[in-house]
Image 1 (cartoon, one colour):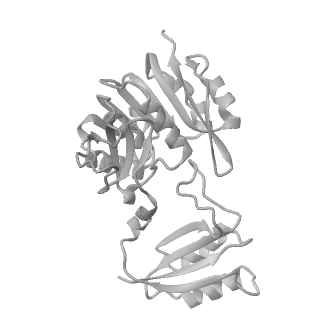
Image 2 (cartoon, rainbow, N blue to C red; image 1 turned 90 degrees about the vertical axis):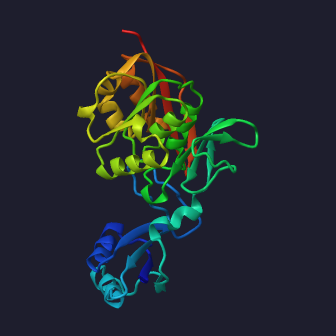
Image 3 (cartoon, rainbow, N blue to C red; image 1 turned 90 degrees about the horizontal axis):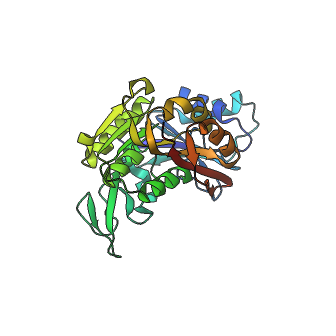
Length: 310
């Protein structure tokens, strides 16, 4: 069906108050974007992307009372007049996949590629491994844009993907702690891991991981869990791209499932949080030097190392 949308520059307005009014008038989706020229393709873990000039867009059915919405915004927010806004009719589209135009194939390290489902990074059509123009045997992970919880565009994900690409993974096992889209565990399987366990407490993340594993022909090699209490056994590698606070809180639990001399990578950590996180893992892990990357004015870190033998 056709849709209508209400676009409003927030200026100094409270985003949560505006969202509440949009929702009351039947918004099918709400999107916060940059009203200037600083696009963010993927927010940092656990954060809502807000820019200096933020714009909210609400998608509505054709019968929605958008004139009433305009009046409610003005009255309830106590405004003499609304900031810049527009109401427009939209042609029917597959809205879940509209952002595909901003997501193209991306390379991480020497041989790992992340690509939208249905797109080929360099002409290969194998879905598993092919040869890129430089003669490197490539591992390609295909993601469904409609199920994206992490695509590699954020620095924290990219740092973990590059770490995996630099390892020899043949026959190893991996735990993806806080798996999101499953991008890291699926990449590890494409790079040679024999078995992966992907855990996330968000049910939608588990759905996305399961579908992405099917699309990448690795579903038979991955176990998807919805609670850390379900994790069993020990792993050759663990990757956890979440947030600093839970990484510190669950340090002992996470490392207890890592084999002696097993490899660990932690991300979702701002540079000023790195020392605190490393201190939490110091009883078990010998860390390499942290790797830092700047994105949108913030510096993120990846901490990697090996577990000491018991």
